Image (cartoon, rainbow, N blue to C red; front, side, top):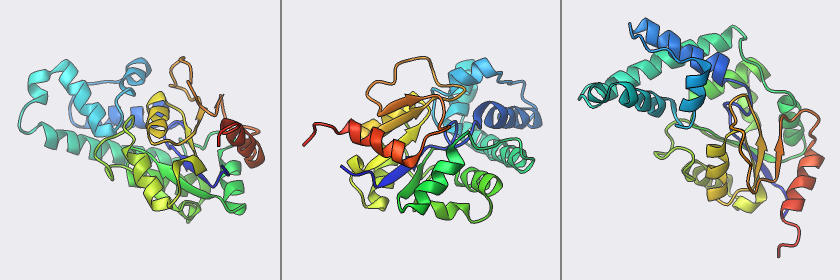
Length: 241
């Protein structure tokens, strides 16, 4: 099977956005709302097991105050908090607080120049994706991607396979022709459940557990070329008919 498309996760994969971006933005939103909630790096690392910002907020609230999290107004409060968190996150991006991980820009541009399709499959909001691309790669960077699946385009977040099915349908490619690039085991599980081979590129919060069936398991994309990816991808199908 020839490699025809790369499908990128965003947070932790394109950039180390979590600890110095999303976590900081959540805390700023909590303070602004007069809440005493504070997420340090350790707590936030645990909460990343829950994919989706609104889902993470509700999970935390249920953990510390089940009655409050069950109140009729809880969903609206979570939505407001998440909206303010997104605004703070975008401000951090505008200040240049978050950069692409090593090797990402080169591989993105190389894949585009050599005719591979590219897509994004993430639970982060479309505004977050767009601003990250604009700030790190310049205006118009979103045109590098044939499909952007982000936010609430599907109801079930990773590790469910829904976001990958959504992206694959719009790419018009079989899963075996694509390579997912993920930094989390929820992301790996999501891609694998959709039949997409996965390259694990570990980030700040990737748990120290085995990758289990990934095309490869790397610390970064530094020095990784498209030809190298194609070789890894080909090895994943060696002996298959």
